[in-house]
Length: 163
Image (cartoon, rainbow, N blue to C red):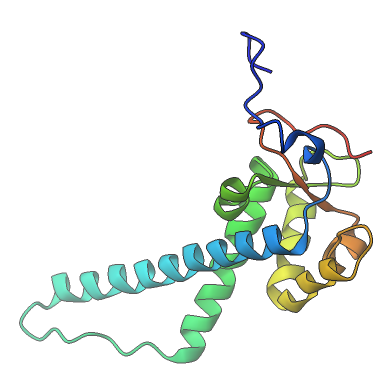
């Protein structure tokens, strides 16, 4: 509720506030996050190409990045992005757009170590997200192993405890 007694959460969504998110919401959020990470990888390449151009403008040609280097760069950016977002606000950009928040087993913001382990689990085994579709608790494989959850949370403040 705002100071004026008006809730920022639509009436239809209020019953879902604080509940675990489903596979569609989480998949859309993950897809948005992949676009962010791919954009970051392209940005790293653009900075690299710009630096090469500034160092030798007459002999410049676009660098050929090895595929392995691009994949490793993307992996590192993905893990740092996810861990940083989950440890600070509990939300990635995709989570923010979909009204989701990742929380620990107490329904609180994850610590950096827990967020880093969760990010590694998601980066190494992203197909585990689809376990949400068959889980009665709407939890991915990483959520089950690490005792985390992704909940609907449209409010800007810290989420309520999972009940």
